[in-house]
Amino acid sequence: MGEATVKTLDSRTATPSPIVDDEAAASAAPDTGAPRARGPRSPRRPRIWFEILLIAVSYWTYSLIRNAVPEQKAEALRNADWIWQAEQTLGIAVEESVNHAVNSVTWLIVSMNYYYATLHFVVTIGVLVWLYRWHPGRYAATRLVLFATTGVALVGYYLYPLAPPRLMNGQNFIDTVLVHETWGSMASGNLKNMSNQYAAMPSMHIGWSLWSGIVICALATVPWVRVLGVLYPTLTLVVIVATANHFWLDAVGGMICLAFGFAVSWAWYRALPHRLPRLVDESAQRPRGALAAKLARFRS
Image (tube, rainbow, N blue to C red; front, side):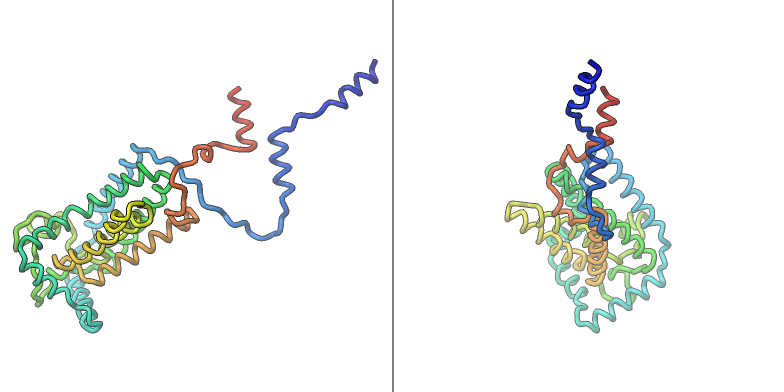
């Protein structure tokens, strides 16, 4: 009887343990000594309340720091003179001609004044909302590009104060907001004390508009929407020059900041935002392997 009992127990098939299987699979993997390449991070579903709070706090912090940078007027004017001379040497100093030509068409320059004041925020927020709604898997990575771009711009404002063309001494640039008495520029008229007037380099109008344009071109499926994605930063470049708020080279500074933002996002996610999955894989957010087994036993 005892022998039969022992035989029966020995002949039973053991139920595989998920913990043992995971450990066995890990130990069976060949160790070549070479570092393993880390794949793209799994995107997480953004939470609307967190995103609204994050964007509001981030922009408030950005404005606070930007306006807290000391207005080094003398240095900012010297830097503006240097930029203007450098552009003349390069043969690209056409800002004054563009400024005067567009200012002669009242309806056009007034439209550009309001464009400069409003679309900078409206389009950027609109693209964020579109990403959140239709591309949640790419939202966080694309938002990180925008935040890193803006963050490094603050360093530029501190290290290189720069007066916009309309504030230069001895030049004939027209401050179009003052001349046409339009609302808009935080650095003109009654609003000039609310913003640092000598933080023109880099241009975040270009940084943010180019970010929006690239996102739209990369992710939109409708051809005419992609065309708008190309036109928006291009028109923004014309506007910042025509209103005498920036030099061409300020736009180059904004592009460099945006390149930095994409580099930061790639370093964190190991992929460019448009290469990530459009939707969030909910199963990827759940614990797996030994941890999943332990949690399952705990819940039961």
